Image (cartoon, rainbow, N blue to C red):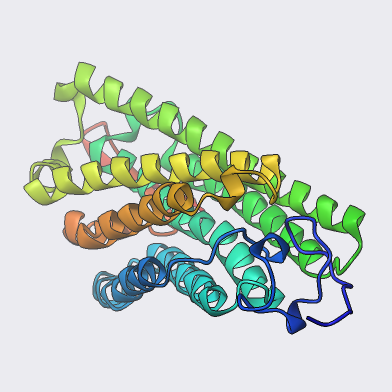
Length: 315
């Protein structure tokens, strides 16, 4: 092994990763204290990669542009992140693959969350915005803005961390900013779930007051399956975000950050389930051509003096 030991790895050790491999260096000097499992990470690349063409097909066919962009952004980042982990299987001491994994898999789910947030306003339109605490456009504007803030913080933290080199204070600052971004995502998702539950409760209590014009949309098995898929995806992304906050908060040298089984379950499996759910039961199919009711403008139909009035709120 070379005498040059001049870089700080994420577990806090000093090493020049260019001179190391598993044959000559102990894993205590690597970015992980384990060698990433090859088969498991290939499976995740395959899952996310296979979702991409389906999202493209359904997105273009049903013109769910915002949803498609969010899903594609998240899925591509997931693929890149697990490619980084596959590279680390062959040499866990390399820093660039570690950064590829860390940044891509940290910010990827924020794009999936944005896709989910775009659905709520449209769901409100289908049931009737008079049953909602807020106008459909408000949900989209507020939650997508919160998601953007989370994404910016996570990306900024990742960029600072990537350029920290051997500056430990700069490295820690970058990690803390990433934690702040993840924590804001947790809070946003929690509030989102509470508002969804509140809206569902109001629908149950006022089932006869729902929008009759769109009863054919919400009466299908596709619609019910879509709502279930949305619940599953939201919950799994929430679980994943809570895990990542805990993981980063404890530091990269902690037991949690170096437990691959826990990571593969609470990160990989959770986001895989979310991605599959959001792909198999695509909202474009569930809305049966009505997705554009909430596409950049939300229509509130009300009858006044025997005439129908359509109001549009640009978002």
